[in-house]
Amino acid sequence: MMKPTPLLATTGLAIGGIAAAVLLVPQTPERVAMLVKDGKYESARRIGATIDVGTRDDPMLLADLFDLNTHIGDPHRAREMIEAYLQSRPDDTAMLQAAAEFFRSMQDFEAYLGIKERIVERLRDPSDIERLAALYRSHARFEDERRILYTYRDRALSPAAMGRLGSLLARSGDYAEAARLLEAAIAGGRSGDGDGDVNEDEIAAYRFLLLDSLIADGKAGHAADLAAAWVKQDAVAPATQAVMVMTLANAGYRDLAARLAATFPRSIARDPSELVWALGAHRRFDLVKQALAGWLDGAGDALLARGALLYIDAAAATGALGEMTADLAAALRRADAAPARPAMAVVAAAYARWGYDAIAPLRHLMTGELLLTQPLFAAGLSLHEQNPVAARYFLLHADVSDYDDDRAEIWSALAQETLSPSEIARDLIARWRAGRLSPALYPLLQKTAAASGSTSLAFDLFRDGPDATGASL
Image (cartoon, rainbow, N blue to C red; front, side, top):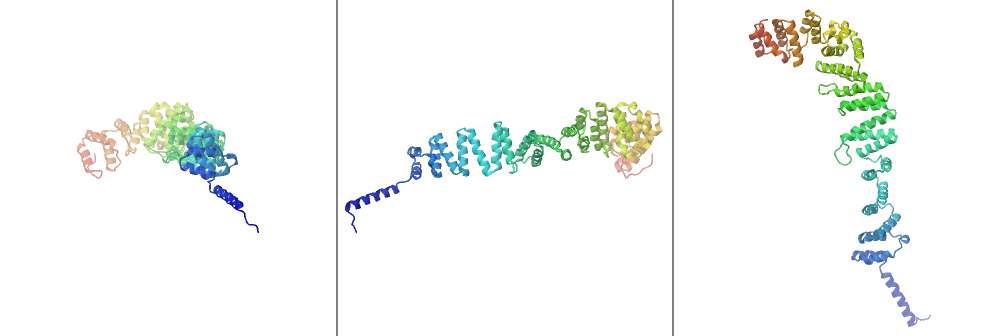
C-alpha cells in the first residue's frame, strides 16, 4: 500500500480546509438576514440585487428582500420580490395583507384591488367583502361592486350591504333575488352598531324597491301583505301608505290596493287625512272609500264624525259627489241600522256642510231607526222640516254621556229651541243621577235649573253626587 507523500497530504488538508470554510460561510438568505439585523441595509441590498428572482424558490429570502427594499425605498425591487413570493405561496394571507398595504402606499389602485380580491377570495370575511365593494363603489365601478357583493351574498353581510346589493339587482332586473335581499335588509333594520347600519331613509327607499321588485316578480300579494304589516306596525307614514296603494293600483292590482288602503289603523291618535288626500290627488275616490270604510266601521261618535267630514270633502275634491250619493243610497236601503251607521254619519256631515239640498235625494230612505243613529242631525233636520215633536224625541233619546264641547253646544242650542227650561233640567238631572251626563252639559243643567226655580236642587245634586235624591222638578 502506497503511503501518501507529504505534498499529497498537504494538498488534501488544504482542499478540506477550503471546503470547510465554504461550508461555514453563511449562505445568501442567512447573509441577507444577518446584514439586515445588523442594520447594514446597503450591503444587504447589494447582495439582494445580484439575485435573479425568477430562479429563486426561497420564500423566506424573498420576504426578507421585500421588507428590505420596502425599508430602503426601492419600490420596483420590492414589487418584484412580493410578486415572486406570492407566486410561491399564493395563500399566505399575512403577505397578501402586506402586499395590499404596499400597493396602497404606492397608490397603485389596480394592484391594490387585485390583492384585496385575493384576500376576500381566501378569507371570505364579510368586513373585507364590504370594504372591497365600497372601494369599487367609490370609483363608480358599480358592476364590480355588484359582482363582489353578489358572489358573497350569503356570507352574513350587513343589512346595509344586502340593501345595496338588492338595489343594484333590482335595477338590473334580477327581481327575485333583489326582493329576497331587500326584505332581509329591512328585517335587519338599524342596529346602531356601526357601518352596517341602515338608517330610516334607506329603509324607506328599500321598502319601495321591495314592493316594485315583488310586483315585477309576480308576487304582488306578498307585496301587499308586507305593506299592510308595515302599516299596522306604524312603520310607514300615511303618505307612504298612499304611494304603496297607488303602486299596486297602477300595476293593475286594484283589489290588493283597496285592501291595503283599508288597513289604516282606527285610532283617535291616527289621522287618515294625509292618506285620503294623497289618494284623492290621484282622483281615486274608489280607494278613498276603502281607506275610510275600514276606519269608520264600528268607530265611536268622535272618529265617525271626523271620518265622515273627510269622506265628503274627498268626494267633492275628486268630483265624485254623484258616486257618493249613490253609495249612500245603497247603504241606507239596508234594513239593519248598524251597517248604515257610517252612511248616516256621512249624510249628517253633508247636511252640516252644504245644507238640506245635499241630502234631499236621500231623505225618503231615512227611517226613524236610522235617524236615531245621528240624533243631533235628526233633531236639526226635524226642525228644518218644521216637526218639533220629532226634534224633541231625538234630543231626549240622544246619548249625551260622552259629548265633547262641540256636540254639547249643538245639543244645548237645539234643546233650548225645542224644550222648556224645566224639561231640559228634568231630563239632565235624570241623566246625571244615572251617571249618563257629560260634564260638558253641566253648565246647561245649572242654567236651566235656575231658570225653572230649582237652583238649590241642582247644587245639592252636585254636592251629594249621582246617588242623591230629591223632589222632582
